[in-house]
Figure 1 (cartoon, rainbow, N blue to C red):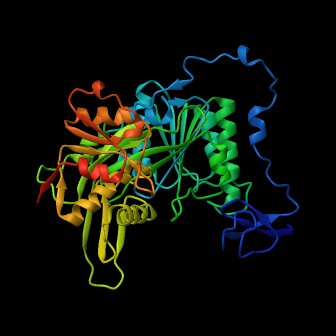
Figure 2 (cartoon, rainbow, N blue to C red; figure 1 turned 30 degrees about the vertical axis):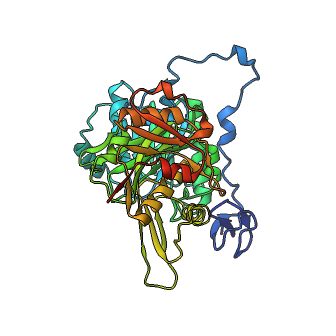
Length: 460
């Protein structure tokens, strides 16, 4: 009889212990340990990571040559933008996102473009049957003689198919659903994910195959499995967006072959994902000239791309002892800070007012350059006046009420000018050259009160 033993592994960081612990001493996570059974008499499977770079000798960096075909296009311009110019041969890319966000859809559309370029692609579906993948492919218009669909969860069988087909690109959908027979734990466990990813890295580096892996996320929004998974791969991309809205964002969190500042914008439709070349028009197309109090347009940055987005605020007397503060699309604590500055520096009494702040389009704004727009939206709604609909707001607010500089201001102004806006309020500390812009009036401000005075108010 084989001698079986158990060990407890943290599903967040991979920390191992012979007994269960309530709190992981490595990552401080609670109730993250899962019991795994292994054969003590059988040696554990050796990691395939070491074999990826074996039998190599040191060489001078000036003597290393790069082939012209080392990077190739995915066929989707927005995807290439996020990747830094396209997929790199021999690399491994991790694509993660919420269920139903469109991860399998975008990779299937990418498969069509890659196969059209003359490359052979193996699409391993570990969660759907081949006929189910075919149904989606028909809806997306995907049809190619060099696209192979393989519905399998056994990683040893998958490796055999890779050896036989010798594909140029390999897609795994998803890494949490496949398992190796060398590991006794269940699919999706830390041991399975770590071992399968190690072997995929060996395949990518030794056979020069581009590997794209789909990863699940937890309810907190993190990639399921050990954190080491993100360290092992070359590129980590998050697919974001509200599943009940059509807008989707591709955001790069790690890229060894390019920048992490780029963001791709897509629109989900019946026949798949469509690229959005002008995202500002997408987020402002429902905005009319009949602007109500509390509505302003800000110029924010998604990566290096400027986006014009509408922010709305609603301020009203509360019937309860404690007023409500609700924010959607912007950090809640940031909104509280802006409200405190309005009360202290401007004298706007909001102690008995409910305040609601919403970013139109389902976007999440992280940068502080949206502070001034939020402040003006709240102030105009509280005083029942409006900002001129042809005005754009940019600026970060300090606790003393000063307007601080923002990055990439030139691109934001050009984007506002291109979309027909006539005025933009910017921080004076940015030292903007007004003569550079012919069709838009650039108004620099130093204090929050100056920004409020510079806005062209109209009575409701």
